[in-house]
Image (cartoon, rainbow, N blue to C red):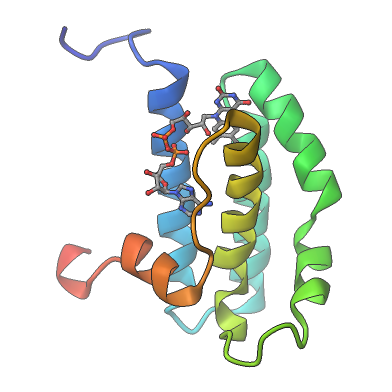
Length: 128
Ligand code: FAD
């Protein structure tokens, strides 16, 4: 069936939404990100998930975000693993949040190590 208005499922929109957010954060951290870009990125994650077109999903996710806001995640990361790159913290944060949804849905958890996130979500310069 050709794609068209109203033919996308929650799963398809979910995949696209996660792909957009993970790709955005994985590539943001590779640039010399200013703190205003970081705040913008956090706002985009909050707005995108709040507007996710499945009311139950976005309501549940808003509880997940309340439990683990970015600021709290940053604090929990301090000193947790000296090998972790501090500039990748946004990517790791979204990974942990996504894993909470994965747990709820009974899906396999994704590794939130820098290398694994980079391999999956960082765009090569030729792809931009
Ligand atoms: P997805 O979960 O869509 O992930 C896409 C790809 O991302 C995976 O193939 C994998 O390569 C990678 N990935 C997986 N986990 C991670 C991670 N932790 N970090 C980085 N990369 C990862 N569906 C419901 O049925 N109920 C809900 O309540 C619900 N809530 C949602 C809330 C939000 C904010 C969003 C964006 C989606 C939600 N969805 C919900 C949709 C659901 O999360 C999936 O997108 C959908 O089920 C398709 O799953 P998938 O197995 O293709 O992989």
